[in-house]
Amino acid sequence: MKIVVLEAGVMTPGGLSLEVYNQFGEVTLYHTTKQCEVIERIGNAEAILLNKLIIDKEVMDACPNLKYIGLFATGYNTIDVKYAALKGITVCNAGSYSTNAVAQHTFALILNHFNQISNYHTAVKAGAWEKSELTTLYDFPTDELCGKTIGIIGYGHIGQRVAQIAKAFDMKVLSYTRTPKQESAVEFVTLDELLRNSDVVSLHLPLTEESRLIMNEKTFAKCKKGAYFVNTARGGLVDEAALKQAVESGHLSGAGLDAITVEPMRNCILQGVENIVITPHAAWAPMSTRIKLLNITVDCIKGWLSGNPINVVSK
Image (cartoon, rainbow, N blue to C red; front, side, top):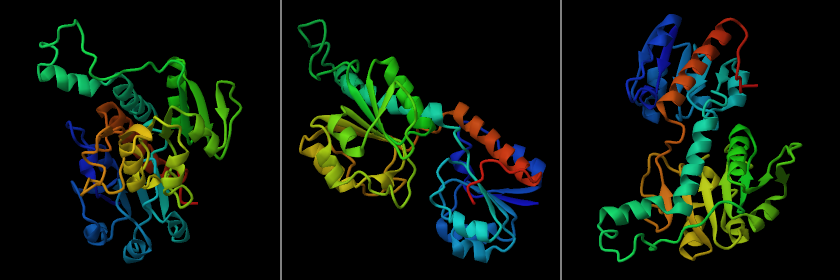
């Protein structure tokens, strides 16, 4: 079998080897692939592995041997899964491999905001503490999470893990989701109720046509004044111009983002905005998490080859 890994570079930093795929056949690795190179590089391969490239009708029709698409990701919005099903192409995502890592990163952003870690670190490096007459600095107000309310939009694996961490900080947890659960520790509410009452609003839902730009001028306006906004899901969930206005106006106290609309960043209007912290879609990427991801993709291929595929999204 011919296998093409179109975006090996997202997996291999730190020396992570992809040699494990060699057990399945002839493997061709590409560090990165431009969208215009996708069809040529797939060629007559039967299986491909990728992260964020678009695999649509045009690509599938141009690659008639293609039978399997494996994702280095949970989200599959870049794949036309309906057309893949019609073509008999199996599409498998990586399930919940990044639950702990993304939930951890979510709280890293939240704690950075409420404890002002990066601002105080910068001030200390600049010598501000050495010049202080007091034993501490009070330049950046901090606050406790205890007693605050976090609103979690989307309550899948990551949203549930974020809720567990929030409860450890004695936060009240609200959630807006299509499928409310029976949980005494979480109150399931409407989106308007969540936005109106949350000190922290955190996105944890997939990007679909229904969820695209769920956070926009109207929804940001409904947020509690001074709320902190976090997005570790997908950039397309957020109207970036509306977010910028909400932060610059002071309606939101700030934002922590690990996902933006165009990645890698290209002329993003949020870059450099005071009180907006941006990390480069890195929440999912610890070495331990990528090893887990690699093992899941191997299991997915094994399942597909045995006639018992797992994590199938092309239904």
